[in-house]
Image (cartoon, rainbow, N blue to C red; front, top):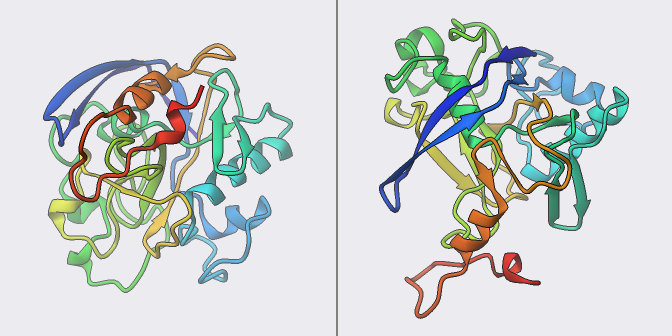
Length: 252
């Protein structure tokens, strides 16, 4: 795990074209995506290319990722980060257990103090379509960023904790980083994608964060807010075609 310092992250919402700045507490983030070997060590089900120990674990659903985080915390005697009841997942922001990073944490860690779309030229840091590979590559083979993190861009997309957009995409969760078959325009620090938490996607894995970033019972931390999720889902009147607000957030 790499130590990520406190700092500020600027996040842009492409739909509303709004920009917000959030303050982050220090936290830890794994230096690479979770590998096949690490996945298996903590009881993950066998995946594609299970013999390729240093290849990122893939495909991994969001639900599988949060369950794996809890299992790893349990193995290490740490408080569980997540409470799970069916599709309803609650994050204890005061837990020191393993968890998924928030989008703000992910982008801040990815940029590592830089402001350009990528922290170095893509061929040096990322596996993308320009490399002509047929799948995820062993982690740590390209250059790290200034925080010592490898493969933050390219190789696989990585799940984050946050909803993608509770007004438009229901319970879709956010993905960051780009994958081995993505063009350069899709492999940047600010690019985001979303998918269903139970979707099985060949180019998707995750990396883990650690660190208590709030008090037990709080519902906001590191750029994420349950109140903001509810407010965004609470849209009234006729909806644009295809929009599916996450109404379950509006229950008392």
